[in-house]
Length: 316
Length: 287
Image (tube, rainbow over all chains, first blue to last red; front, side, top):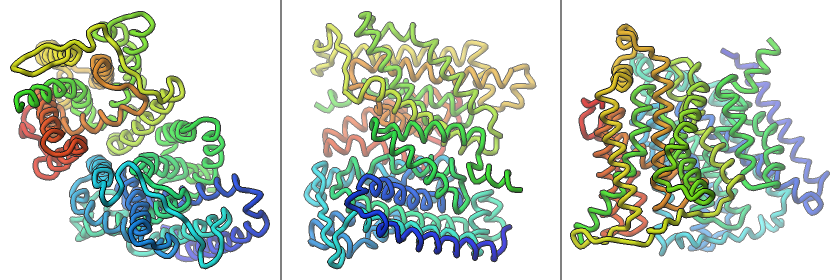
């Protein structure tokens, strides 16, 4: 097991990187680099989502096929509060995470009784059910018409690409910090035990369901935040885009290519793949999924420890 | 009124069953959940559509031509999954087949665009009456072909040596190999046969469903629902489960709201997993 000093270095490195990157909008003004900031926004969101998926799927070994559900819940929490109560999305952003946590508690009651592939499929089913409920409850959610989210100012500052970049950068950084803190806490050992062999974990007195629930709630919180940010950035949410299955598969593909169960796997995967994926996407829609998907098949089959595993082997 | 709803539900249920049969056989033998299954159905639909558009071959006949291609696809995917150690097989194959599924659907979109397509047969609009229910000829033919294929497959599994080897491998691979069954070859063939069934089902249902690249994900969830409902690995269970799902969907879309039609499959799926994980037949039947 890695020691505490190593983790301290991780935290320090993360903070330095965040602070250095925070100066980027000063060097490259948002007006001139609109496309760049769109890509950087996507990159940060994917790091956030992949880290969220990794905490549940990598650390605790519970593969979720339902992250699109949490993203959708977060997006709709913001959109509905904005639409019905006229609140600025920026003031209520944390609520998107909280809404997804509440949704995850309900989903957890059902899905956490199941294991392995059945857990994965039940989260997929529950995400779809949530989407269909949102679609069907027209009086409250406007159904397939969708809801417009106007962004407004953030405490008097205009919401430009650079501002979005800074906000998503620090939220993604916060998710990574959470992942580091989990890794160095004793919870990591509980998660590992549950991931490796749930029966054995229960036999030594670990309340496996409780730890699976913790991982699910932390994961859902960050996925919900991602949903709220996406809805605000796009300025619009409808059931199709809010609960898009792509939000489930993208983090899975990126995390596995980067290195499942490691802290920086999702980051490395995202930084290496997303820029190429986004360039391909501008050629034709969904081409980025083709690219990620092919890499996923190759990595899952031949290099299950991902890019991080490759690097580790190199430098040992 | 109620009779006509049930009849229509049963007709669609037969086709659902055919999709699920392939999935359940693959699960029974290999213990893997094949997320690619719906996309094999999608490929079956497109191949039937293209053969009908270009050469005027009826979608009820074209599976004879396309079946070998699906066998090859099945063998190729099996070759990708085969070397995964048994302990990781369940989860790794789930994720890898999900990847293959997305790659296939995206490729289909690049090649054939996202347009909705339909197979227009000369008798597409014609109907006949039975118990006061109007039934379209395509729906009737598709269901009839599905039932015939399921029955034929049932006899294949119970009466032929190959079928019995597949069942033996599903029950206990070690004992089966002691009795001279080549478990590796059987697993590979099972995967191929499962995908052929999916491809044939796609062709058969192409006259009554819209065809588009991401259509597979609709079928894959329904097929999983049927598989857990009928019991993993059971052919008769898949037939009964398919009919039950078809009728429940038809009833839900009439008496509740139309949007409930899609929720019902998920609700059945979750309730079976939670309350009766062995399926309605109690998990005893293995055929």
